Length: 283
Image (cartoon, rainbow, N blue to C red; front, side, top):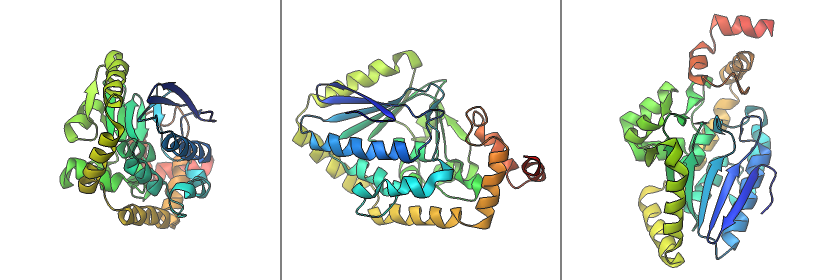
């Protein structure tokens, strides 16, 4: 498996997929295209049972979508979404796949990055390094790629509202307590824990793994129509003048730059403010 933004290594029934899309692992057309091709090839390989996702970037697992290229990356999804251009439906396809998927997270994973790991079957994160967030509210948007569906089911109504309406970062320990991830683990032991778990799961019969996942999905995975609805709302809100203004403000304040987003939650309340307008006017 050779890709532009993914480095894939194989160990028997396990493939480890390292995300490498400089400068900050934005979810853009190239990464989405590679994920579609990866899923297609992995599903066609009967000997493959487990995919482990991690990042080559210590600061960013997946930052979020590339907001300047929404139409482009959506087009890359249609091979696996029944023709509807939707990153949310692509992620749901991964959730419904027979493949067992594990996210090994260090660094920031926000927006669609968070929604990607939520689409994985299990999530394990490094204490002191991993951060999770859904910052869409600051832009006048909502999580459109599965965050609404997954977080509500995992956390319950109150905590999901807190996570989504605050736009704040959650560290690994708080994310574990709220149900965003399976476990927070010491950074130095995270990789070995995930490798051991992947090997154990991969040792069991493929038919059993697929049947268990299918039945759990029947209980816990929202219908495709709900993902499609969230995706459509995201697109509608993104086209609104308020979202357009806030995106311009964010760009002037350093959004979609590696250093500018190290503390993204601090930026969000400034969008639409006089400070942002002044910065934008001088840009």
